[in-house]
Image (cartoon, rainbow, N blue to C red; front, side, top):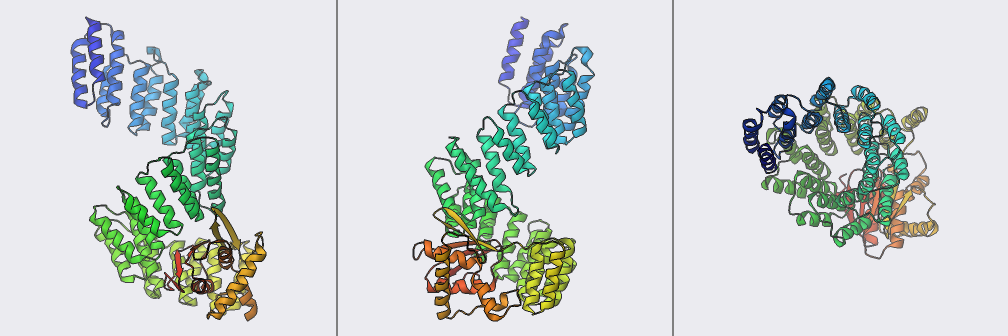
Length: 625
């Protein structure tokens, strides 16, 4: 009879998917089994009841679960573990930890900690970043004889790593006789999370086996780190992707998103198109996230038409997809289109976020839409309930400053509810350079250098302003200050992709194997555009040279060398895409307009701030940048 009831309850629990059904089964259990004198026979059903409750598809009713737990007179290890896990999955790791210590006090009731208990409690410590209790419980591992246990060791690695003690995590891994793939991957993920890319790569090289997670972690690590070595790291991501294919590991959408991110950083449009073809050829479904990555890559690689095409093809778009499209249009100088895109987004019922408004304000800044910029800025809080962050104030300062409204920009800085950061002061300083206001630049610089005393770009910006004003003594003093502080100017560089390979040039560069032909082409280019009316803008040089020396310095800027190489190596009439790490100078901007006209080429240049589309002697920025 009893066996039949137990089977009936077990069967009912298998079909239980709602809290109401569970309470009905629980009531049946109380009616039929709770009067038994032998609780030992009921432990299996108790465990099944609690396990079913905490694994229901709906959110866990912790109060009910805890009441059920306390109703069991002698809960065994499995029941304790189930309750600890319930709190962990309900994002209450502190209660998981408390229960573990309570469990230790019940050892005289024949309750013993097992490897699952330790694995759970280490996960709780990891989520709490509770290194002290984690270390204390580590001693229990030795006392209870669980040192060789794979699950416990892996949880320990994760706990130490998440708490920032990567050296302890590595010691645990190195002490394991046969660490499995999961153990390696856990530490690999944490190395990447903390930005320890070199340590991650060393571990990756040491791994006896690698799976999709291992490859994705490394590729994502290199693709997502955006420091001064970003170009090198993005190249490393693409190299790893190639090695992954050689190793016959089949990539997924996560791999593709990371690889596309690397292409976007490099401006490698050809490679990006190849990845798109690979996705289609191998039947990797383009979901919303991957589709957004594709349109972001096209936009950042200078192909806004394909970005828009990709955007239109997506059946489902979230706020992030719309924001990426708005930012892409903004960076290409299509301010009105970006605003129109925003209107469509609102019509489709998508609620904007703070990133959306950064794209909108950027669009207004690049297109000189001052009034519309103010409307967007004020609508954030008034219409959409989004409090502007300091980045949004920085955009407004930039909008006003570029338009020559320097006093309004300065007043906005005075009245903003935050202490201005370096981005805000740099926006004002950039506007001072455009409108040649050396006095206000002085104030902006003092504040900027106080916040960022070692950033080379701040000194360079001020040096340009002093050079414009022909205050050469101040330029000299600034250079001395940089030298004393050991501040090195980041050299300007420009890159171009030809036949899926990216070539990089710096000013006066002669390292390329075809250097002789490049300089011959450059000489021809300069002769032809001068015949067409180009005159070098020597005022854009920061050195106190004579006129000829200034012209010579301008003639070998990295953009010009990259374009000369593009004219040599690409088909006549095809577009040339250049990517520069700094802002394009006024002389290069002027010369490229002439090159586009004389050579009948579309030339797309991405500098640090935006895209410039040169065609037939004019630029999409309308000389407003």
